[in-house]
Image 1 (cartoon, rainbow, N blue to C red):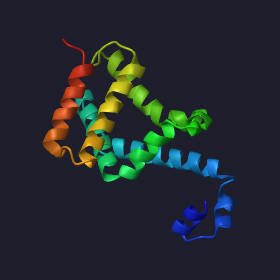
Image 2 (cartoon, helix red, strand yellow):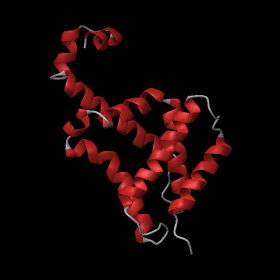
Image 3 (cartoon, helix red, strand yellow):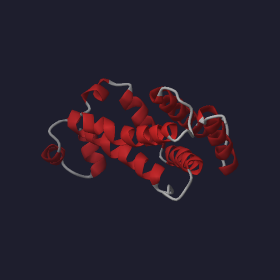
Length: 163
């Protein structure tokens, strides 16, 4: 906490004025970070876009966010694999997840997406965004607009309903 206080330019006691404990600060940071991801994912999304365009917009926006904010990417990844994740309130967990699940459900209900377990579909989509961003950040491949479009297309082809 002293390092956090030093980085924030405040006394350690000031942090405890706003947060009961280190745990409360970490949980709040998780909520804040997932809200940033959600905001970035929806920034270019418009209701007048068809479902496929919304899918691409969400996929690419999220990947770009993680590339531009690697600390957020690595924090979220570390957080969900830590004991802190089980301490999240239902509200903290549902904010981001509800948006993703509702989007997938709408795709399944309208026949645009395959009828499959939405949790598994969410895992597949989310994991390929994370891996793409991490590989880019590691310098193993450069993801420009063309490469992101291709990756989003591969994700799309894996979940869309074949007509």
